[in-house]
Image 1 (cartoon, rainbow, N blue to C red):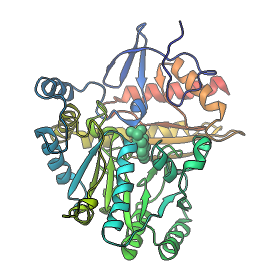
Image 2 (cartoon, helix red, strand yellow):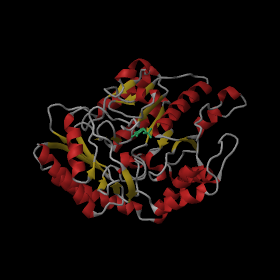
Image 3 (cartoon, helix red, strand yellow):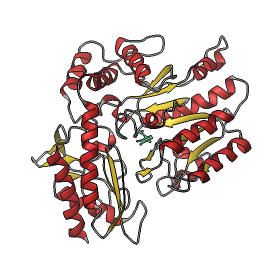
Image 4 (cartoon, rainbow, N blue to C red):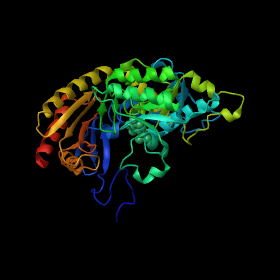
Length: 417
Ligand SMILES: *Cc1c(COP(=O)(O)O)cnc(C)c1O
């Protein structure tokens, strides 16, 4: 009988049945029938130290034995308190409060609601959002609104709110983006600018310069527009620093984290903010309350996993691993880039990307699916974004693993060419 499961971002009429995965360890997955697959995209960008890191597994087990779940309004618990304090200690300086939710999308929804709540509560209601072209912030109605429009959200377009879109800051054209931001700040009195710092992930691993990030933050500050950094993908070492904002030395007014927050073990997200945002909601007027909650806000087991993740950053040479992986990726990418049908090689930290030269570009380009299948046959999981091939592996990768990934990609490209 056919499976009743409806998979995400999957065209069930065209794609083969989902592969059953029975086991995961480090960078490797094992299928139900015993095949090994190297997880070169960190299971959709979430797994940082590798699958089933012993410290995270131990923390989950211990917490499950103590407190599994408790309402987070009126109650708190040690893993959430410890995690919040530790996050504030490592986040860009100046962030003071932590609001919990359970996915990247909810972290961004919370950020947008915080921004609008701030303006309403200080008596100057504002609702316009400014965002980057090609941006991606999630799949809920609000986050789709902030993100790029395309085949993903055509059906929902009538429900999406209008945002002011800035051109992507391509190298050499950064000033256009900054001028557009300046103009939007003057014209629209926006509530906030939301950006993915330095790397636009789902938009095609598009990379821009740290200087643009700090210039955007400066322009927002000059106009009193809130600056939201969506670090859901870029956080937790992906770009070579713990948070991408560190490359530019900036502190956003609001920052969203999810994906690697628990090392990729359990769903958990946080939205961090500056004191002004929290203070604007703190009032004897109950109407100014921040009205947002998820049933599982700050689930204790997920928080314990996140605390264990932070412990790994303290006790293991994570920074060195990231630097080493970045260097290995750089070498392998440079070699791959010599293939004649590839162009636009780019890399930041552990993220490497390159484009396949094709006639039908765009997310639905069939070449991406073909390549996905051909690489998977060779024991490696990648998931091209249209004609963009990228590798974003866990940090536990060995030099041999890196070699294995890039040979699989190279062979697969020749096989489908
Ligand atoms: C993945 C992603 C999201 C959404 O996160 P989910 O946990 O999938 O809801 C939001 N923003 C960015 C930048 C992302 O990469």
